[in-house]
Image (cartoon, rainbow, N blue to C red):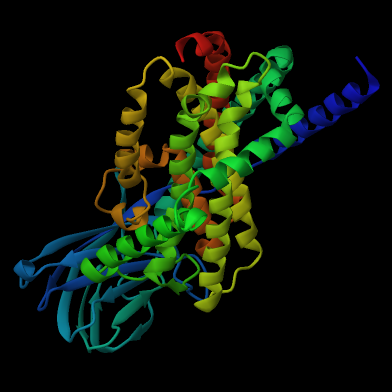
Length: 466
């Protein structure tokens, strides 16, 4: 082994040790929630919102909404909101109209653990005409405007009871993640010759890849009057249509980020659609790469392994344009991008690697099973709605069972879409999403290895089949 390779291996070993240290010492905190439950009886129908926070100045960290419908007027209706265990302040918003509400039997619940809600712990209020409390119940008369009451209250007793268990669970989880990481690194080292074949081919042919990618991008719309302009017009029109349907037609409200800043719905929507457009283009283009470049596949000396990445880079040109457009729209709306926004390029890289791994498998299989292209089109139609792009998963958590929320989060594209919003709106670093980050890269590595294996096994039959 040459000195250069020894130095590279030593650096990688140090990196693995540092990652192990970071994983084993990572404090997952209280990643659980308790339900705030109370019975509400009101004189008007309106949306009842709950904000929660763990800061002393009460910067609302998120909101949950439950509707009190017209048919509920004068009736006791159970309201349920999921709040983090670290909540220290609760703000209850009572719609926007003059009304009288009676709240009773307010409490925090987690499994068989229950903690009463102290309705007398009022920090401040707004547009409230009268307020009377007794134990876990209170009556409030609101003015029109923005009536709310802030309580210095949280599930602190439940938190203290479950904290030891959460710490044990976090330690076990960290050990499992560290072991899995070490096993993956050990496998990569033992089978490094097999794993390195595909990356080395891509690196060695990087100049050709860029040339083919530029040519693919230019020729895709060759012959049309507007040329490559169509690559930008279609996604832009799609964004406008979704915005019109959801905000103008269905009345989707502006979104309040965990920082307490409210963003126009269209900006929130763009953060989800920009990565989705890229994934959709790369999956469709990468899957059909071998079919489109049949004449190159049949060339004996041509490295056909570069074709999927050619389609990826071709789609990347449009994606970069929409990233900068997104940044410009945030700036024009008065929400200036900061250091967090740089993470958009990290999440773009994540999406690039994930879709590339998937495409190596799909482009190999579609040669022998042409129906796969149609199946993928159907999957894309379903996944765009299964991924929280047009709907807010935070607002749905009170209406959906926890296991279903977990299923949605297991979708790797959720990590990307949520990451774009973390970068532009939520102001959260990617390493703060520790579990999701590790899960995403583990899934990406599996897809890449499986995709490369399928491609290698089937490529000797490509020319004959095509």
